[in-house]
Picture 1 (tube, each protein chain N blue to C red):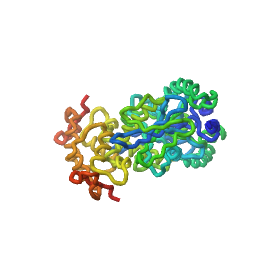
Picture 2 (picture 1 turned 135 degrees about the horizontal axis):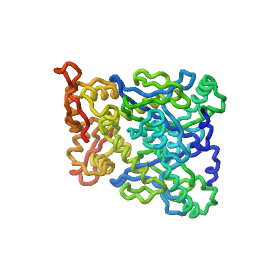
Picture 3 (picture 1 turned 120 degrees about the vertical axis):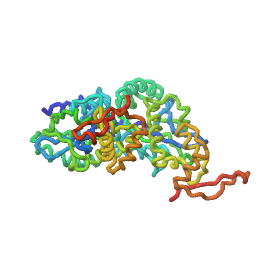
Length: 237
Length: 237
């Protein structure tokens, strides 16, 4: 099961990619986390870079392997190359490999120094079918406001991804990547509020959003009380 | 002279850093370029990452080795990991090593696949004493509007650095890193215009700059015709 990690001639040495996969569900921004077999250690979705693979391709492959999705907004945001990643790797390697009952050399890659290239992905939560993969036995969407202690420097990687995403929020309208094809104004507002981690005045938000001239109003979303039904919108083509 | 490149146990395999060193001179944004010995091949200032060195430290060391400067605004902006870097490396390796009259194995590192982590530095041009280093015999500050064809994908790296710098221009006021301690309003405007590659209306620029409340007006800069002397400014502490 772990054999492909031993085939070191297939992978570039010392390099990995880690994907911060963001989804939006129940008015919360969530990150997809994986749990190593037989442990309580949670990590981001990550992998190595093939010797015949672009780094961007490696990140897209990792994303596909864990979510089944292609053609997803996936952006490189930072490369993590501090030595202290390494110190912590040696320590966590011992506890994880022991718990996973793996001969030491099967997971020896875990204790080495890796420079990891961080990507964040914005996915439509409802379309994801999670596959935990070879070395994990569980996967879960976790609120960014309630992350556990993660493997290595993965908490830092999530925080840096959030920073990068906030910078691109207005400029590139990336928030819509997290929504389905149609959405209400309050759903858009909830995405912005959770990413920015602050409340926005509803009327101001609505005015700003409409002034961007990017939305098409479709019809009311009837959910019972028709007199309160909100309009549905979609992005202009 | 080239011996340290052979000591592969000192460096991480397959990883490099490249620094786009920006300076501002004669109303132009310039990049510091180096020319490989006995060739016409120009490149950015780059280097490897020591096995006991953080990636950020490697970039700061490269910057110091080429400019003699420390405590400089130095920012990681993107990591370049496409396979095609490699194809081009094999090709350029042949022409450069032949011209440099080096035994093939001395410069064999040049033909391998590297993933390079890009940094840009903003320096006060007047403080730089350029040292071309071990493998170059010339260095020059070149207008970003008139760059030659550079080694590997270094033109692409410069363009991506410019993009990143433009994004941080307002938010982080990085333009001032390129100026001395005191400057005139038209010098600041020239920095902005050259980075953004567009003309700005003088009165608008001045109004916006003063509204930021970050400048202290010092005194007039007398250069002869006193009636036209512009004010000097410095950044508030």
